[in-house]
Length: 362
Ligand SMILES: Nc1ncnc2c1ncn2[C@@H]1O[C@H](COP(=O)(O)OP(=O)(O)O)[C@@H](O)[C@H]1O
Ligand SMILES: [Mg+2]
Image (tube, protein in one colour):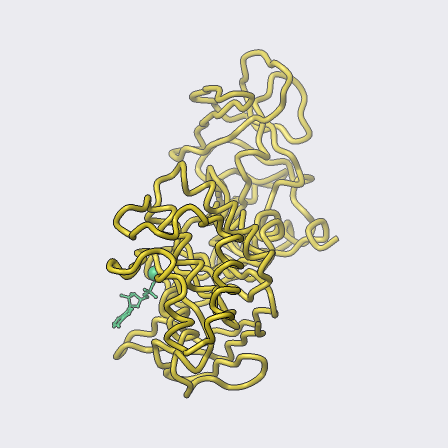
């Protein structure tokens, strides 16, 4: 196991910077999840850690030792990709022990290691089968077993569940999180799926446009996004955003007629010279037929229930926003929107950076 550090890591393809001055420390045993939209540089970063991609500048360190010039095999990493390829002519047992045999590990040791991973991955019944006979989830488990059987210092996983169908993916995701904690192996996991990141990560490394946007544990990432991008990328349905236009007694919401009372806006935001954008998550909104902490008159468009939750849309000027009323009690017909004050986040409309308020900092 190892601590992994990226120091001012940049990777260029011609004039294009795929990874732009990235700094990150992944602690020994940590489960770090790289999250971001397609093309933002996740795979390129992971390949650089593996030694499959040369860094243009900057350093990669394992336990404080620079590994830039080490070959992939000298780095003691294991990598599993989205599309796993097992050796078709070898049965599952032979597939799993292949890396050990290739290294000339003694027979007794191989047998011991095999027992260990077979037990962890519950592959006892599969050992004599051949890859073509396995369902995709099991193939992925075999690939993971083959990856961890030789005690890699670092486990690198690139969208390893995205080729598996939805229903099975949930189960595999749960097992994978459990396994990583049992193995205690430093893991860097790449995904574009925020739910996957939220459920697996010790810390999420959120990336956009070749740069790291925010590094935080899942709860902090959700409740304290440092930017519009974080707020928008994490959570489903997505955070709603609207410009705040100063109007004497309060703030007009974008191009609508609705006014947010000044008391709802923290002092340092109220007095800011910058244009302000407000973000609020759908679940911090309610349908109102009476009093609410903050109430705003906006026409509710559609309401439909899914189990206990009532999803609704409403108009802000020309735009449409979403809310999810999670309160269990029944309510009459709604004519306006209520907001939980702690759900309001404020951003610099030009830079997209979060404006830290006293409430948020407390
Ligand atoms: N070998 C390469 N040559 C040129 N461009 C590349 C190469 N590998 C990746 N890229 C580009 O770098 C960007 C980041 O790619 P990648 O790291 O695969 O993104 P992600 O995994 O986040 O979807 C993309 O625009 C991709 O086209
Ligand atoms: Mg990728």
